[in-house]
Image (cartoon, rainbow, N blue to C red; front, side):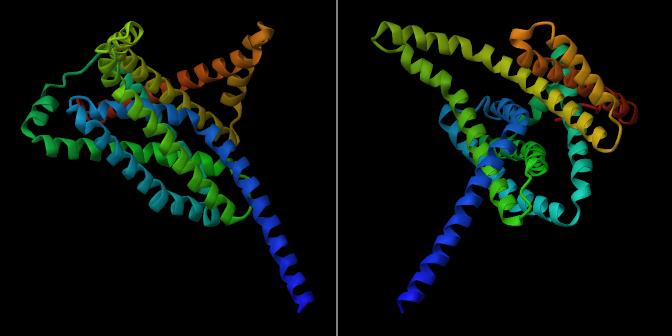
Length: 315
């Protein structure tokens, strides 16, 4: 009886060790995968606030929560199983799919940058929005946000999957699930803070405490400029991430020229200022990837303009 108990305890201890090792592996893989998807996370957080502009303040958090739940549903119920099936049966398809997503990001980024430089007429779109009731408009905006999020979420999951080195399916599944949940929480938590910052500022501006009033007024006055800056950052992130994905994907298929060009350029410029060499190397790499992304996106925009004159803008 005693020997049986000791054997059972040994088995439990062995299982606990395996579980601990698995959790350590999951944690390491999660951090690595999440950091690789950082560029798209920035873009996701930068894009989402525009979907709540124009709605009553008491509806903003509800709209963000609906978009977040849709994003989480996409990641866990659809994209996660699809990613695991790909890794198990069609691992060669991951890089091409990543590159397709990269092309889309380049196109979106180029379209947004062109729109920033030369805004197009949005009268027809605004007229359609006026015809919708507030509830119908909210539903339409939420659906539009979730559709956009599908592409970004697919890129996040694909990048995470390509980064995970664990051989077993369980670790990959747990890591992907944690990455999906964590990134969704970070993105939409940040969006909620950004969207409600002006309301917090307005409340602080009515305070009897002088410092609080000053901070509150600063928030109210500064948020429009901050949101505009965030939109620009999101556009740059699209181009940087999309271009980087394409450069890396081409190297995976044997064409190392673009990757070597970016690497050599970044190394040469960064070595000129040794104290900040690592940071400068990253910055030059990101800028070069962004330029490549914009060129590719501009080519796609031009091709669409030839095929569909006047309809090349993404909505």
